Image (tube, rainbow, N blue to C red; front, side, top):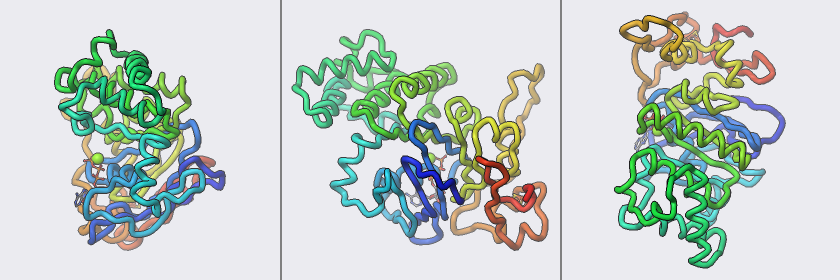
Length: 324
Ligand SMILES: Nc1ncnc2c1ncn2[C@@H]1O[C@H](COP(=O)(O)OP(=O)(O)OP(=O)(O)O)[C@@H](O)[C@H]1O
Ligand code: SF4
Ligand SMILES: [Mg+2]
């Protein structure tokens, strides 16, 4: 998708990523301005995680960037060596994963894991690093951090582990934080607390955030802008307010209709669901790749892919039915 002329902190242009067959990320362009939070939403299998992992050079085995660019302040990241990528991670860009247990080491206390990050990235002594770890845990709302640092990951609740993960990701004051479904594994109350925490941290440190979720409700709580990903492409992009008040793509409208309506007194027994599923990358339909699921699909939709149209200063959509 075309994006604005103003250069962002992070610029992704026409990025294609594949596992050998059809690209799973199939020509994505996104711009992340300093200080903003960009939400990426889409159902399972749309390519959200592969897209975010590519920024950090953490693609799974077999995946390859086929074409396109990822630039951080003009510096091309797709060509960096493994060593340069390592220093980029946790220094300029860090990541919070859906399941913190996969990112935390089970045999080390959280204090020693956090201290290690400070020692490596800030070059401080063991004692200073420990004090910083305590403060970092306090900043993400962990009670009695002096005691908590002696705990192993398995001794913490899911919400507490996610706070530790966020503290680790923020330890080196990254310019960009990538959060891939950071609250999906948590229950609703804890999820709300973590979202609150992310909003506060953002206010305090002006961190630029790429926030990924399949849940548009969660995305709306934290994002300034939203990009809707469908089957490896961005089908709509707008400010959060614009996307909610004036959604244009039938897929976006479907995601919105599937949100629970808290102000409706009697909830319908079954919430709206978009019929069908995201196609596998090697089984995409002709024309608009959403057409088999779209209530507005026409013959044109079945044969030709819709171009991206700018319909407002900060609103783009790829649909034949959108106002031209
Ligand atoms: N390790 C892998 N090997 C082969 N194909 C993969 C692999 N990981 C992902 N894919 C393919 O890439 C597509 C996008 O996967 P990705 O994990 O990015 O989706 P996602 O949008 O993050 O989904 P979810 O919401 O389930 O996390 C998948 O549909 C799958 O076809
Ligand atoms: S281009 Fe056609 S099939 Fe695709 S989303 Fe728009 S109306 Fe539906
Ligand atoms: Mg994912």
